[in-house]
Length: 137
Image (cartoon, rainbow, N blue to C red; front, side):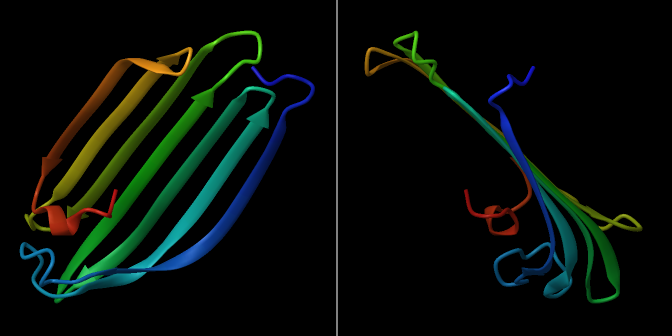
């Protein structure tokens, strides 16, 4: 729930997609296309949230792909508490038509910091496909 002091901004744009076949050898050629990007930023006292959603289409050789890349980043640092939490969740999917190789990556990073000391650290990453196919982390 947003408080009265919340500031939310939404930005939309279109960007080029390019993944080199030399970096991602499962592609039949260099992947090129365009994607729509929506960024939502929410800022309140002691709370920051960023959501980045990228959805587009691209082709490599004669194969068509759908690209989906979503990031959610949250920082909670209430002034009334000495506990800070940070969470970053990333999801990337490159979906090929007609049985083409699909690439996916899902990662979650979470830290809990109490009085400046990390007391909990979770770093989970699951990928299917060569690392060069995934966006840099």
